[in-house]
Amino acid sequence: MCGLSITLEARMISDGSEVCRETGQKVYNLQRKIKLYNDKNVKNKMPDIISSEGVVFLVSDGAINCIPDTTKLKLLFEDEYEALEFLQHLTD
Image (cartoon, rainbow, N blue to C red; front, side):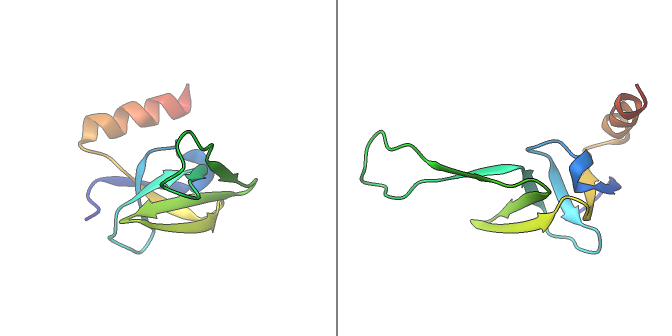
């Protein structure tokens, strides 16, 4: 569930951040690239890395959604101090 948040375009949010869609409550992990492994039985197999300019991936419960990086998302914070620290970092 989304609690304290700031709405930003996805391109302004760091990889690994927890986000919700602007009008949603489901929590996702934002990623700019994802790794896909073709076969579990092949040891030392290099993963396929998928990334594309202008898109980000929302990962949750084994599902991966690809969205434009201009999409507005709610960046989640644990408390107001974390939110204030983020805002100060934006203005530096």
